[in-house]
Image 1 (cartoon, rainbow, N blue to C red):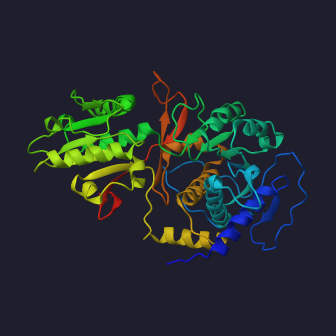
Image 2 (spheres, rainbow, N blue to C red; image 1 turned 90 degrees about the vertical axis):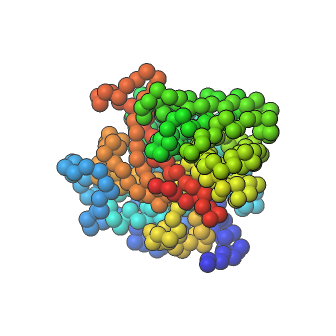
Image 3 (tube, rainbow, N blue to C red; image 1 turned 135 degrees about the vertical axis):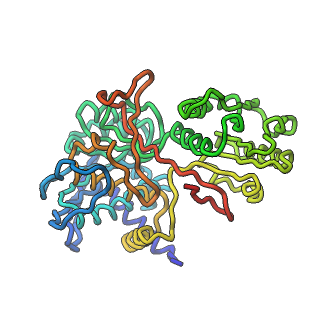
Length: 443
């Protein structure tokens, strides 16, 4: 067990807050040196990168990251790539040196990214110049940041994380042929005809398709019922389309209840049970824990000896008012974009490196920062700036799961092997089952 003293945690946060605060003139350092960098005096009112890291090339061989053989050789040793992180550190909201709680995502993500940059400096034959920018919170501040000419120096951007910022920034990068990696937002249709836009977090559509594929491995469509409120009905299309693509003409049954429903006492769930077979219920909702609990309670009351399975959304992992007995007896499953196996050595190694560097332990955002940055650096080392064109060939394991990318096309567009996608999306999704008081992967 690792114990973290409050003073140590505060010191870590204070250092990161200070790094954000002096953003107007970035400090620079090279791998292999331990001499601290003295920041120059900031220029008031002039946004600029917060931290710049220069890595010396390492002449050791690089490990493969997956993909098909006989690809072009990686860039020559010494190739330099400019990488920029755009994160909401919210330095304008700092008071008395305290870091705003809402900046936790950025702080953790960047700390994980720095661990990955350290690792890349020893395993890859490239130079990475990394600039870090504070996007702040509101759209006006971000629009101002986009006018800074120093942004033009970067070829690859990781972030921003807010959907509204991405909507503004995607056209900016598209017009300049920059690579934009969205590490957080799971939105769909943020950009079009932009094959250099890479979405890391699977969309709702990807989650629904993953659940459908898993269910159809063992169940026929006539055993599946989709349950939701009227206002959520548009989500059911993803399941029905995925079911159709698998084959067969039978649609999933749909149980739509009024938006005011807070219990299922007057809903006849018995009609959806299949004697002698497992009856499957899918509830694509996450806004109301009470709604989910009401359904589970009623299903447990009426199911009798019938076997049932219930499938829900990633947010159910954070539900704290649902008795574990319901989750276990009703065979509850959820989808998730990430799952961490803390028994794996590589996870333990990252935790140790993160703790050594920061004095605290990583959360999901810290792991995400590491995974995304390490993947980006390795792809640059292997394919250079053309790496988005190679995403079809790459499936790589990460600490949180896997990156497996699919081409996403707009309505009516077909992938004929020649046309470019609107964007790329990591569509790998875990299916987790509740077992022994926690969710664990089933595949």
